[in-house]
Length: 102
Image (cartoon, rainbow, N blue to C red):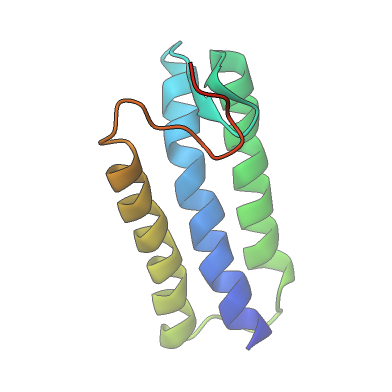
């Protein structure tokens, strides 16, 4: 069970890294947990933190090879994150709950 939870969250973290890395590398500001409009450098750092956590969850959660179910759970974590972010970013006024409006 721990392996499946780790696989799901590794998908979440690795897929969440993508927009932060892309926006940061392209020199664009993008929302992070720290600010609604974080600098490109902060986005690259946040993207790398997400990648490190995702890889850690894959590598160190178990020493057993992944089976089909574990891979499917990993993909489910990536899919849920991707779809949630796609829906979230359709709102041009999107903010995380702790970000102040305006």
